[in-house]
Length: 225
Image 1 (cartoon, rainbow, N blue to C red):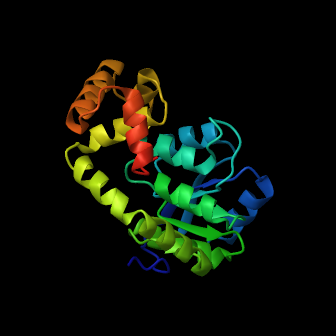
Image 2 (cartoon, rainbow, N blue to C red):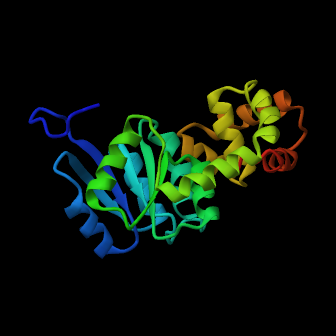
């Protein structure tokens, strides 16, 4: 683990995403000196653009955000992650509702802590997420274990089938299954619409499906959205 107190330690770069300016400024002030804030965003669209532009190591992300398609923090992760592959996402929210926790974790967040955490606790959690750990406020961990344990049997089949797909095909599959157009997928992944079409054809063939509607139904059935 990097010693953030060392004068030669490289600062951990983060972006703060929250639609309340007071919270953003307060969190920025409370983070320890070993963390460097590259920028702030208040909406889904601004957050996606900022994360892809500055490529932070960690995004401190509110769950409920205005803008975009109404998907909040989960939408930010799904749209920004392909363009910022080295970035990890840590959800910060006043909500401790199970649905909010599970939704953002399924989208790809590495952790979820409530806004009652101190600046020191958030700083520590951000470092752990950057190092690949999963971090949750104590009472929230049970939600995740329950949610993912409950679908373990269902996802076993999906995992076997997903193994047939390349990493890029899996990215395309999830976006198409969520209703994104070829053009939107192409923009999110920085590839051409023709390449998206090629990937979709490969996904349908490998999963033995005949249309994107069947693909959406398959993804919902296996809880991949």
